[in-house]
Length: 443
Image (cartoon, rainbow, N blue to C red; front, side, top):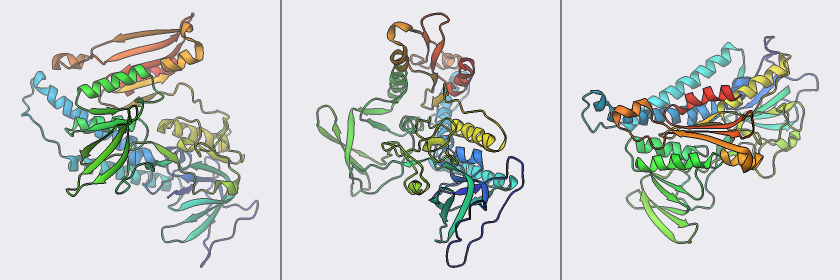
């Protein structure tokens, strides 16, 4: 369900609340020049909250807060703590081994934190005098949307400016026979992140990959991520694709897959199957054609220009629902803020999508900013690219005797002076924090 929020007049002006529902039906569309709001935000992600604060059926905060970055990183932290407990005896702490992990307790703590964030967003809406509608939205025309509440009640809302920030939804397998559709962890590299923390808390975990790991990232770094995970207990089925999942009498799941090279079939039995095959933009139910908003025929994502404007000048889109934008929470937040500042604050600043840093929270974290080595060679030619690289051993690995063979950093540069840095790639503890500093230097 897409939720809707309305923003203030300007950035500090008066709030206008004039929408009225007509008993037994829907209020008529607003006449030109008499629209309900200056700004209407449709969607539930970080970008929409940055524009006007809003929510979805997952709760306020969208993918990141409810089923993405926040719970993922908290569970990643739980696995890291397990590793630190194993290191503790080397530093003099007498810890009885093995130390059991309580999944239910961890899950409850994570969910409680998510609920607190949901509540915090709702409070912020009220503090900013933003009206929040928990309704499913679709366009009626280029200035009007129709919202349907859980009970079926409809309401029409109109605005001078409309921002679409509906993000993405899980992509469910259509080519695989499954006993029932199971929700999945989201995003392309979340498969590795989830497998990493599941292994880290002591669960036997297998990843099935039909092609390369971490598509779009530097492949040397990606290979080292996989090597580290494999050496720490995560199993990999490479070059394989699932064909069917069958529930056995004892409740377990029998998975059948095919080797993509040989065509040979094989099977395995698992307690749980997590689909991590990506997301699709949440645009199909918006009736964008009624507003004249163009989408990509291939991805169904919304096409925008450098000002985040769609094919309809007063309708905008930010975040994961937009074609060609990085699917990252901080990027959506900044794009949303800059957009509203342009609309109502007199600003002309545009979002800069170059050199946006990102981190993959695998057990050994991978952070990067800028071009991969493959992208640099494709853009500039092999003869114009110089790569500086080094292995290193983090200090915290020394006393504990941890294997540091995959701790690695490399810098991709132009060979000719002044040897501009095209990309920085870092594999090791706290990669997210380290990469932020490098990103600032590169920018």
